[in-house]
Length: 195
Figure 1 (cartoon, rainbow, N blue to C red):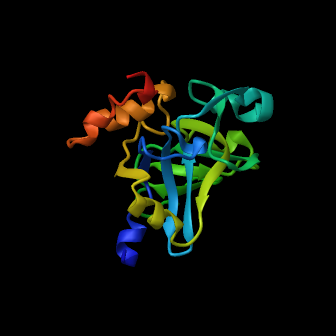
Figure 2: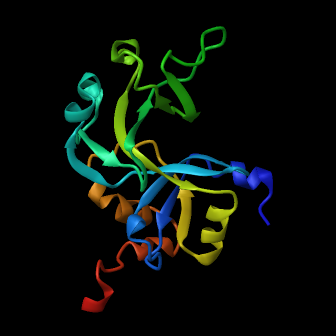
């Protein structure tokens, strides 16, 4: 049984789909966990770019979006809603407001952007921005069950993962950098039946 401390510690970590994960929504997915507690888990898939440009759906934010400047499919839930993740570099200084207006820190320098706020409020503060349509969600205990079943590898995230300029290679590159047998999984063929 996971303790609350262990559960909380998964926020900010990556879930990397194992080759055994059968759900097509998560085939070779890399999910950043934005929230994980006793009430459930919420994250976004980092490596599912869509052909839709940020300017096509959120024109005011297009100039702040990093390359590729497309909307990413954040998961199978609520595909008609948008979620913005952004980096605000640097640590808050004592005596100053901890966070810029329109941005809420999730972990480290990464936080959620209020896409209803005027982009000019954040333009000077943001280092990078990525827009996601939808999210991945798990009810209480559901993710823990999937972890026990071996559906996901849990690994540390790195600052560049969220804004990878080559999201199609993210699954392999995250696995390749692991200092364990997981590095070998990066060589797993796309279609094992062709082996």
